[in-house]
Length: 160
Image (cartoon, rainbow, N blue to C red):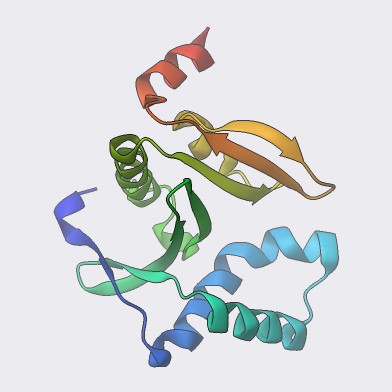
């Protein structure tokens, strides 16, 4: 993946339906077996989320392909929504933005936290970037990455 073709752009009100569409495409197959998929409830949940925090739009050659939400505080970074349309997954886009997030966290000496649905295979991406499972709920893994936890060290650890 040529990373020069990737960018982020601010989300605008007219992006609301796009953000829901990418979330639905990326997440429905993991949500439905656990809770079912009630379209009305999902739209309402998205509306409430949207009013609190909007993700940024991930673009590839000026085409909208996903969303990422990073909540920043002076204590930590929190990776919230991070969705790509399925046809853009496993092409290095997720790795590109995980590299950027790790660099930001390391430069500011901040830990990074996230939650991931247990059935979602993206957990392997997070493990490669130094995230460790710190807890779990019935449906999610709670993960944390300490600053300067290098991708290479994690890869070495996984290969041992």
